[in-house]
Length: 310
Image (tube, one colour):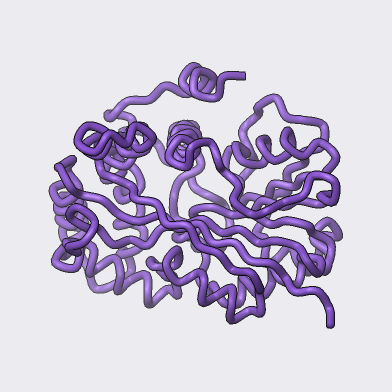
């Protein structure tokens, strides 16, 4: 299957769609995750997954997994199931479980893939498929807007892993740079407001950068980190010849009209801001993240191994 062609045929959407001139639907749970779960969001997630795959030269998984020993694999926050399907195809002898707050949209799935509906930290106490010491590999990507206690979450994943099992977490640090060195987002009023609101809710908008510390604090060994540059727009492909950044860069340039449209509104409501303030922050976000040469952020891949019993 050609992932890119299939995604584009299944879910075509436009910038007008990203303006959300429609009736949004969200996860019907008490979890904090604030992005929608409708068809347009599914299309965005599929395109985003393809962008990250290209950025990492097809290396979606970085943990040093062994085919012959892999039996039980979990993806937390699987979204459309893109990575879960990839894991199931790559490791056909393993049983793969994808977990998400909302039902996964219907795609053709391998027979060794099963989806679980719910909040993983609640399911840990009730679902035998997430039993302590059962998993060989746990993966999650882009839960920056969904986890309010990263140290506790990483400890919980350590409990589910068998000794010697691997945890891989891929996420952002929401700081924007000009040509990789000069931080520009510290002066953005909407980003200051978003960061303050996130802190009050327990979210860590720098979780990608901080993940090494979370894993080491939970006792993981052999922790490794890969850092990727993510441009806003196509400038890195044009100016530096990094063609692998093109799709994700173009995707990232649309985020003010999709991701942050929701995050700003849902994060700031209930605080001291009026609806006019919130609309103003959305406008500032679009202005600050307008495609422009040199604007970029960082994406981190962190892997760690649960130690063997001594």
